[in-house]
Length: 454
Image (tube, rainbow, N blue to C red; front, side, top):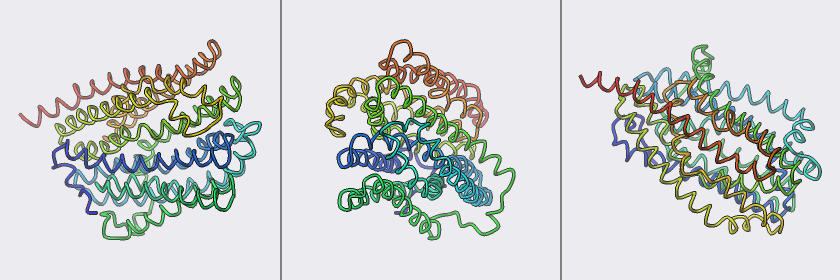
């Protein structure tokens, strides 16, 4: 599994390179998404539909803390890619060492705090009524593994920044496959119910962490850090924080979105509406895997070439990534529009859910063909180290448009208006991102290209 060396990011044809980077990322995201999907199917059929809603309530809390690892990983990965592109491996090593220290210290503190405030957080995110007890059971056990989950998320982005997408793919697949196997053992064979589902999730990330240790200690990684690299450097910490805050803010807004949507739906339609959203949320994770894979594959290519001053390759990578992602998004759209009833039947046999979920799913995915530009545009600014525009563009969909829409429209027009808020936010955020991305290409990248070629 030789992978791609970091130098190849600046030499190979961009189209071929993007496929090499995006395909393993897509497979990894697919397997991870299938894990969430099948996990939901197992829980729904072996425990009950209330268990699906319970897990959906817990996800934003545990994912937010684990997302700290992703934020530190992506923020540091941008620095590592640009440092390797600029021929500065020492900065890359210090960045990785600082990522390890920051991830472990912050997530341990937050995991302890999260366990201490479980009785406040679980109902606050919609775990009310019959949902509370199974949600708290799941939440408590999953929180034990959150620091390890965060380290895995951080390490995966570092592996990809090195130009080793196949190893990153395996790192994503291990917890997914492990979770499904442990689900079968703990829930179906041993009958542990919600506790079994939670221990399966937690145990799967310990398996992933063991793989990460092997990778970084073997000869596969270029990042061989020593004790000196673990000392926090203010400049690196600030840069990781500025770029990582983009990812963290996005996940924070996603968590707030879950809070609002779960509570609004519980008020409008009770546990059934929360379950509908849980099913649709799983499909959002699963169906968009190829588009997200292209976005992940694009990040190290754009970052490395920007750091190396190869601006024509940066523009080429933007153009090709948007085209590939748009085509894949169109295929996802066609699939969802054609088979929503069949999709919902996989999750549940509950007659009320079967009646309500397909129509809601069509609305949620209605603007899928346009999201490629929004995702690639926001990713570009993060890849090249421009934290402020990356942050603003990342927050446009969920923060600036979606949350205000769901706070206003459902109160006026009911539950259907909440589902309609999804495509409206997609279209508006894509328009804003497109404006800033094209302006960046016209005013920043093209003049740099012209200056180099004169």
